[in-house]
Amino acid sequence: MVFVPNAVPAVKQSPPPDIVALGRRLLEARQRARMTVRDVAGLMRIDPRVLARCEHGAQAPAPHQAEALARIYGVAVPWIMQGDESAPAATPTPVTPLFPAAASAGDVAEA
Image (cartoon, rainbow, N blue to C red; front, side, top):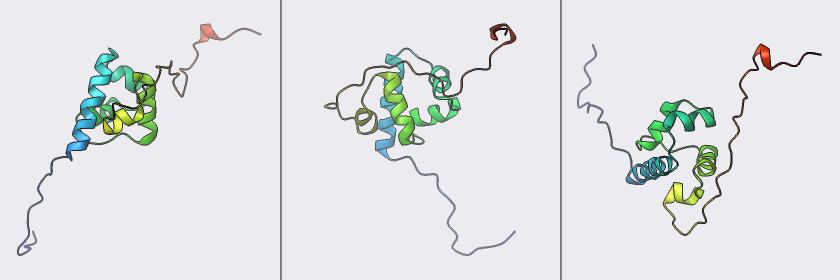
């Protein structure tokens, strides 16, 4: 063990208020869409824990994730990111998974 004089123990800092508010908006939009974290994460092909961290204000979504969330929830990206109510809402679009599920043996057409 090494003694370091005047060392200050690390203190866990709270996330900035704007990220906490962003998380609340994500949670609100998902609940309005009547979807679970697993539903949305499955569509986005991300780990559900990533979305949960965003909703709890522990991290902000990446720009491409914010765009996907806006399409899924039918809201505008500026509303998600800044709470801008004047931004036009997006029309919910069907989201196709990036990597389709593997075909089963019964789905394969015979030549």
